Structures are given as C-alpha cells and as structure tokens.
Image 1 (cartoon, rainbow, N blue to C red):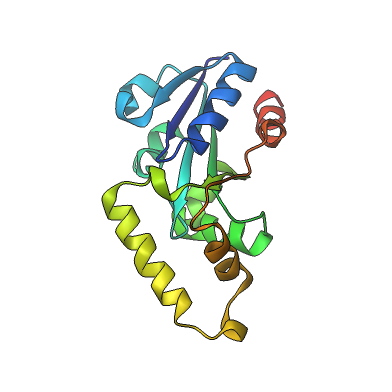
Image 2 (spheres, rainbow, N blue to C red):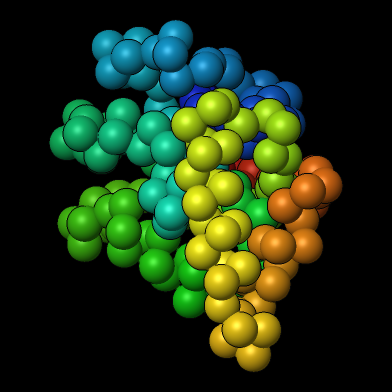
Length: 175
C-alpha cells in the first residue's frame, strides 16, 4: 500500500503531525506546494492535514476539487486547532469543508495543535488583532469558553501537540 501524507502548515503544528504520521506509516510526505493531483494518482491512501482558519481547513481544496479522482482511494483528512476536541466543533468543521457526498469518501480527524501569534504572517496577525479587539469589547459574562481561552493564549505561544493523537489515524489507515 502506497501512502502519501500532504500538509499545509502556517505555524508548524500541522507539519509535525504530518511528519509523525508519515514516519509511523512509512509514507511519502509532501508540503502542499510540492504536490498535484497527477502525483497523487500513484498512491492508494492519501492523508491531508491542514490547520483550521475560521472552521475552514487551509488547503483542503486540493482534496475537494479532486474528490472524483480520489474517491476510490482511502482518504483521510486531519485538521489542527488550538481548541480542545468537542463534537460540535468537529461537526461544524466537517459540514463547512465537505459536502454530504464528499463526507462519504473522507475520514476526518481533529488533532489539537496550538497557537503562536509570532509565527503568523502579517495578514493573519492583523486578523487576529481584530479578533482580539472584538472579544475584548464584550462584557466578561458574555465571553464563551473559547474566547476566554483565546485571550489567555494570545500573548504567549501554546503547544498542545502530542504524538499519541496520531494513533487514531494510524489505526484507521492500517485497518
């Protein structure tokens, strides 16, 4: 079984999970900028990882726009984010990124990553600053748990990655 792990990572959390997965599965690994659909045709299993950006998985279009060419393969997608794993968040991510038909062909996993403002590009820093201001304008009692958590980690990097998080993916791919 030939396996490809593809990733798009802005701050390194997704890349680390992709590297661990590729190592455990003896898979080829590619940054999304180095792969196209023609290269993926020779693989039986495709694993794609991207970080979350407003519930959207960055780079997921590689998979969704080519789903008809990939649906006979084992397709795995994982997304990383700073929030703890919660079913309602996972369902929102799945529904936002995949049509009902696409969901039949993709196995999705959420892996907790982290947050590092200093590693963001200028545009993302600008957006995060706007989000911080918006959150800070709210009264304390109006803040959600995620908003409280975001304010707490905004000024200091946090890293929640854990290699054991990939083993659900490894088990699924090997099944």
